[in-house]
Image 1: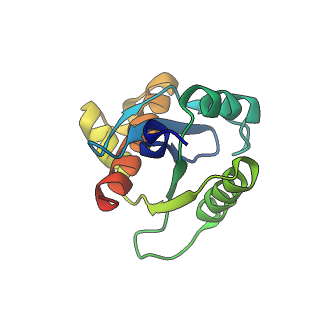
Image 2 (image 1 turned 90 degrees about the vertical axis):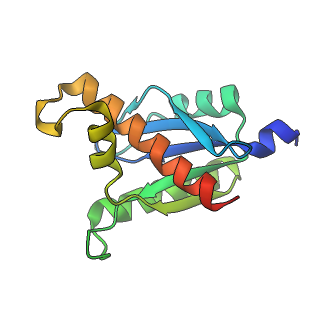
Image 3 (image 1 turned 135 degrees about the vertical axis):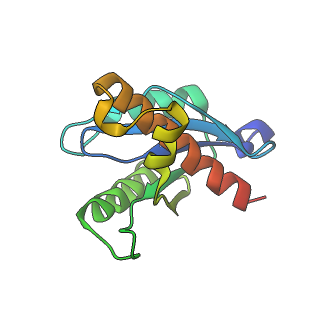
Length: 143
């Protein structure tokens, strides 16, 4: 495995309509949002993810775990965890879950907008900005 690949990770903000995507690396612990992936009821087109893996050749994945504010679990968390496990099983790479509470709110604040005023294209951008924040959280903690 090349040194570059060991440093590169892909982050995901799992959702039922969109999955936000970001790519980052350990050297600077920073990430860049990519185009969000349209999904059907939380099920991605695996060909889209195959292309991401081929293009970026990551060392692993980080998936946001959407716990409730009180730390309890919910249905979307169960589905995000299933997605994380499928990533690991399909690609044989580490797939780390990271608490993502408030990442979407922070992403909307960074965009200077409220979620209710965003149209669908902007919502997809919020998801990838959230994926960036989730991935950076992991990269900064992993230093």
